[in-house]
Image (cartoon, rainbow, N blue to C red):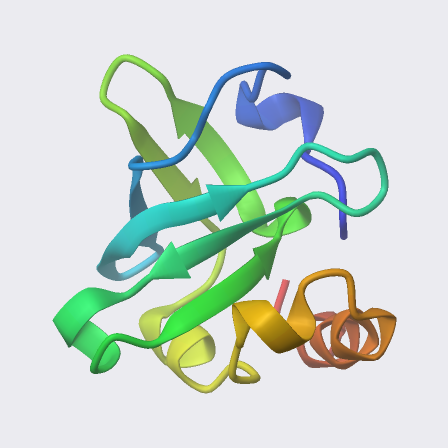
Amino acid sequence: MWSYDPESHYKPGISLVGFKVEASDGHIGKVDEATEEVGSAYIVVDTGPWIFGKHVMLPAGTVVRVDVKEEKINVNLTKDQIKDSPEYDKDKHRGDSAYRDQLGQYYGRGHI
């Protein structure tokens, strides 16, 4: 769940910050932060006005395609799944294993 799928066309070293993020049913925002740490990679998406400025952390395993030319990332989640995900607070949750466990439980319940 916390690693990029080799089929996603993600290449280590590519900055994903600013890429558009598309859920399976439409646009959800732009990448605000991304990591490529082996076994704990994720993207943080700024949903902008769509969910009133909420930020969400998505495990790298939710990424199904990275289009570098179009600067777009597709994830295998719906807008509702993302909207209902646990709240992200960068000051509180960055590196927080309990928060990652919470996300793992949420996305592991058949969401991905």
